[in-house]
Image 1 (cartoon, one colour):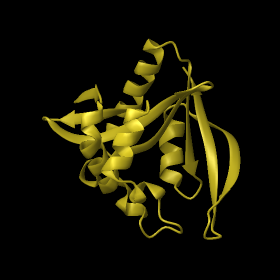
Image 2 (spheres, rainbow, N blue to C red):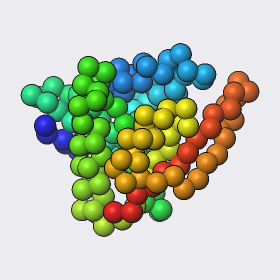
Image 3 (cartoon, rainbow, N blue to C red):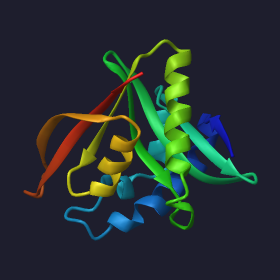
Image 4 (spheres, rainbow, N blue to C red):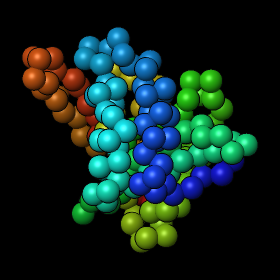
Length: 155
């Protein structure tokens, strides 16, 4: 497996991986906002300083994560592995690569937010040494509330 830092020209690949991975949440209440993103919104975000890592197996993209450097640490989101490759340790390899990147740029904290209803993701991050440090309720315009946990890991 090869994991590379993405460039703005990778927006289509990043978007495709994200949509394939997040389709499992299309029937959630509400569906993940990842499904509302477009190639243009991903490209625009990359143009404004967002970064991403893309994982390749046999030269085919199989997963990715998007992230930003914030003052408190490296904040990641939209960790995506295509459905047919889930459960094979790819997400953990992507997270390890992300942590290696953080270490290289002298950042000692990685952070993310996860829906409380998606226990498999909370368990994944916990297994990698992440701990819950905050809980909140996000209020969507349609009146739906989403319980979120914030997780972090000291590197």
